[in-house]
Length: 492
Ligand code: AHR
Image: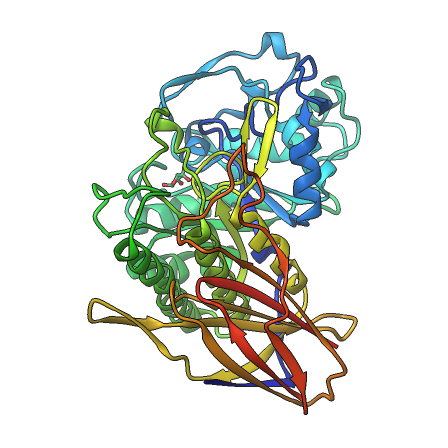
C-alpha cells in the first residue's frame, strides 16, 4: 500500500500553463501535411490549415507553440517565407531529409495558426547562419506598429496591425547544429543578438537563450554567469531513448520489458536534470527570475519501417503515454523554475500527439495524456508526500509511482498518478488534509499490452476512460491503480 499525504492547503506556486507547450519544426511531415495542406487541398482546411488537426489541438488547450526549429531554425531565413507564395524562393532542408522547402508556410502562416489555436507563438531566431540585422528586422516586421521599412513591408504583405509575439529564442542547440559553439562563445553571441531583439510599443519580448544538451552543466553555468542578467529564459533539451548510445534506437512499437524499463529509467532521469540545472541557476539567480525552458523533450526511437529516416516519423504507444505523464509530473513539481516545456514534436514527428495519413488523423496515447493533464494549466501546485514502492527489473530499480497535484481557480483538486510497472497494480491511499472532500471522480489511460497503440484502422485502442478503481471515504481516497496506467483524479 502506498500512503500518500496530500496537503490541500499547502500551495507551492503556480504551474505555468506553458509547461503544456508544443514544438513544430520544418521537419518531415510536421508542417506540410501535418498542419498545413494549402487552401486548394481536398483535405478539409481553414485557410490552408487542416481543420481536424486544429480542432484536436484546440480541445487539448495548447498554450504555446515553438517554431520554425530546432536545427532548421539556424538555417532559416525568414524573408524567404513572406510575400506571395509563388515568389517565395525554395531552399534545401539539409538537416531533415535534404528535401526542398518551398517556404509556403512562413511567418504569416505560423502566426495565423497561433491565433486560430489561441496559443502564444514562440519563435526561434537564427544565430548559426543568420545575422544580427536579420534577427532585428524579423522582430521589427512582426511587432512594430509605427512607420518603418519592416512594418511597411508587413503591411504590403497584407497585415496592417502588428502581431503580439512574446517568446523569442536566440538560436537553437548552438553547441551543435546551431553553429558548434563553445558555451563561452555562445554567451557573447547571445548578448550581441539579444541586444537587438527589441521591444516595440506594448510588445515585451521574453528572451530565451539556447541551452544545454542534456547534462552539460558547464553550459548552464557559463550562460547564467555571463548572460543571466540579459535573459528571461534558458533552455535545456533532453530526449528519452532506450540507451545513451545514439546508435541504439529501438523500435517505437516492438519492444519487450527490457526496453520498457530502460525508457522509464531514462524518462525519470529528467528529475535529476531539472534539479541539477536548477541548482546552478539558483546560484546566479536566487529569485528565480530566469525560467527554465525545456523546449525539446520526448521519446526518440527508430523511424517507422519504410519511412524516410530524415523525417523522424514514429508511432506512439502506452509506453509514450507513461513517458509524457512522468515528464509533466516532474515539470509540475518544479514549477518554481520550469516556466515552459515543449514536447517534440506536435504532428507526425518523434513523440507526436497527432499522426496523419492523407485525409485521416489519429490522436496518440500522448495526446490523451496532455488532454487529461490540461487541468493543471495555471493551477497551484500542492504539496504531496509519499514513499514510492520500487519497480524492479533485472536487478535495477526505479520508483513505481510518479505523481503531482494542483488546485485550480475554482477550488477543484487534481491528482495525476502514473504506475510505471507494466504488470503490477498499485494499492494507494491518499490522506486528504486541509480540506473536507465531498466527492471524487477519475479518468484513466491504460491498456492490456505495453505496446498498445492507436492506428488508422483502430483509432481508439488507447484513450481516456472513466476510472472507478478508487473511492472516497473518511477523507481518504483508496483503491487500486492498475499496472501501466496514467490516472487523473478530481476532488471537490
Ligand atoms: O526535434 C528534432 C531535433 O532534435 C531538433 O531539430 C534539434 O533541436 C534536436 O537535436
